Image (cartoon, rainbow, N blue to C red; front, side, top):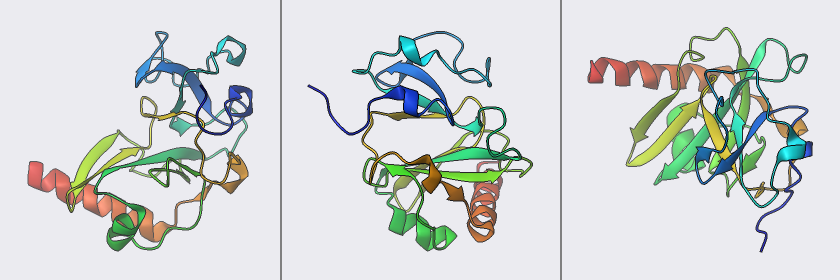
Length: 173
């Protein structure tokens, strides 16, 4: 049977660029880097399958000058652990019990260069700020799907994330 909340992918298309998924793999070619502005025709979605939400640029005319940053918290990484490292985060659109967090970031910020995965205190943090990075959703939005809840990532958190990534780059050389 169905799990989760809103499985009407039509609701996502006005804001997000979306693509049907099987597990964590795109069902059709062209998702991500090759077609960063693409959105799969929502009328062709199977509501029983998850959807990939492409991070980076939004649909044209929506939040111009900003991109969607997706944060994927895995293993021991929780919002509380993340906040210990980058500071307090404002409420925003989340899913999977605050394991996926969506924020706006300025399109010209250096963080918007490539997708990254880092380990902090035994927890994994996948940072998806650019085209080619996506989060897989099954409709299990925390508090329901409401894209109006997405807010800009505070500058202190953006600066701290960039610093953590810079330190990781120095260590990994």
